[in-house]
Length: 171
Ligand SMILES: Nc1ccn([C@@H]2O[C@H](COP(=O)(O)O)[C@@H](O)[C@H]2O)c(=O)n1
Ligand SMILES: C[C@@]1(CO)OP(=O)(O)OP(=O)(O)OC[C@H]1O
Image (cartoon, protein in one colour):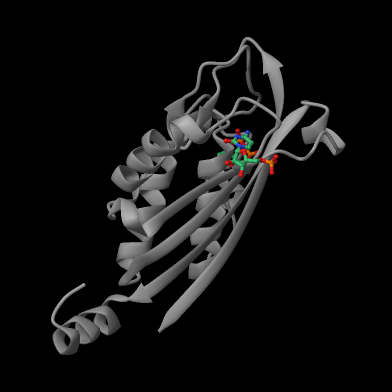
């Protein structure tokens, strides 16, 4: 079977916090506020994976009032969700990810972000597409009060993938 999931997250920009996107620290005067490290790209991705699995959302798995998750690395949380995907006998087929931010320009971090996520997800870089766009100075993103991120993922059942490879002779 194939499954598709969607995720969205937004966080406020504040002074005195690191800016972490996809597990990569981006040099910036402002960082994202949150109970965790506030890596909204990973949060959107986690919600997309949970959506595909039909397993609720990030807050149900990692409550935002639990001291265990104070300042936690979102990469660690993502790795836990990857274990759940594996336990359900699914593989990540592809992910399409988008950050909406007025600045900084993220193009030059694309490779680092994709590399970091590929490591966390244990998949090849070719299965991850990362995009960024501004909000053309409109709304909370446009006023640089915050950033937003969207994620879509598709999962393929491992036995279907193995069957496909047996008849096609590989990826
Ligand atoms: N934070 C961002 C925003 C945008 N980009 C890149 O610029 C292109 C044009 O963005 P518009 O919002 O003006 O359409 C976009 O396609 C990205 O390549 C970026 O790197 N970081
Ligand atoms: C991972 C968590 C844990 O507190 O991170 P937060 O920084 O609170 O981020 P948010 O996207 O608001 O909610 C997800 C939470 O579960």
